Image 1 (cartoon, each protein chain N blue to C red):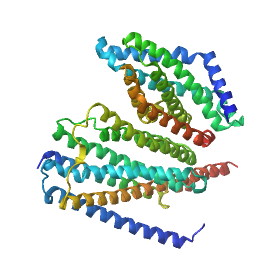
Image 2 (image 1 turned 180 degrees about the vertical axis):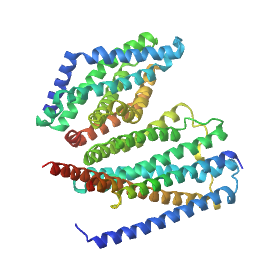
Image 3 (image 1 turned 60 degrees about the horizontal axis):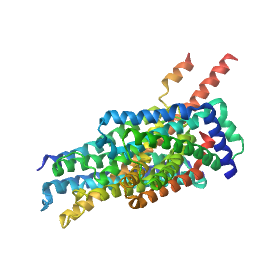
Image 4 (image 1 turned 90 degrees about the vertical axis):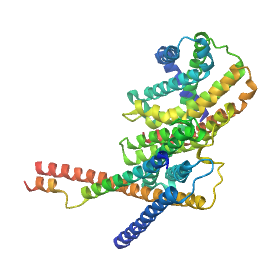
Length: 253
Length: 222
Length: 48
């Protein structure tokens, strides 16, 4: 399908505007989450002040998960011959990269939670352990993406690697939590899964989920645009190099 | 597909028998790893014995990386890869054949290694049925996973560093499941390892299926 | 307030904003390189 130049550019304009709106909403939402989380919400009976970390730690993990899910879906669609499109590959790469950032933040906030709670920076909590494994797993995926090669080849092998990685996610979670539950009962529940969340706390948590998800959408879209730009750059660089060689050859003739 | 798999597996195993890389390099490597664990953890058998299942499987995982790299090094020399692609063999068959060859090599390695662990760490190999079942199931999964990632990375210049990074995190459930099954068996309660064995089976089935499905595009472009 | 809570919020906010800023900077650099006028080295070569 070939759409006219005007419609493409105006559509790009509209999507740019939409993206800006998403970005501003994300910014405002995160600012409100921080404000509510740090100053407005009350201390919890059992967790005290630390409950405030609850408003950011689970949203990080949630965003990481949907980011990997998105990378998996677009990789799957890329491998399907009928929907093969480099845009899907860019989306997978962008989403996975943002996912790695959020996984790193999940680990950081979980660790910061653990230090005052149990006196150690790291407990072999099943969720934290599985998240750490996913972190290195997707670092490998990003490393594979960065290996240069022909554009379609890179896209195809990345898609396969994303497939292999994502299928592993439930197995990792399941096996790690089983591994921990068999030997000793889970020490203290991370992220207060048994915490009674009420009133302003519930709203703050919900706002945290929504605004960090918006931040994910915005970051992924920006990363996607960057990928599209560098693809175009590589293409133009190639055609320019061909032109130059051709000009050289002609000047000799 | 099955005939092609049989052909490729036979070819790979014949190459290994003649070149003896697996026997002369991979198995001694695994032995060195097991020895080094002993040095790192001290000569105390009371420390080593309860850890022997985990150490054994870490050694197997590391050796699996070497076996995988070897399996694709065989293809990349002298344009053998193109020969394989142009031979008209079914890619799924190629995948199954190469995975089967690595499986056989790893099983031999595991047998030698188990003996070494029993001698060096003083592990009493109880519950042989569970031990063998865990080995078989875990090795199918490892060989399949190794073949997929081996094919993904084999044509890259950074394959030596990239393959372990890709392979090890994904294989973590196998390490966990096989180690737990072994620990249960060694501790004299083979009955409680059933869950871990089924985890290993699920892993194996999943990655064999994925390998069969994606090996065609993988061979094509890399 | 517990310093751990503040540290947690700080880590999240600083990392996310520096990631966003790096994306912006890279995008701008890529756009500048792609701008059609920005081929001075080529035109210089050709005019010789």
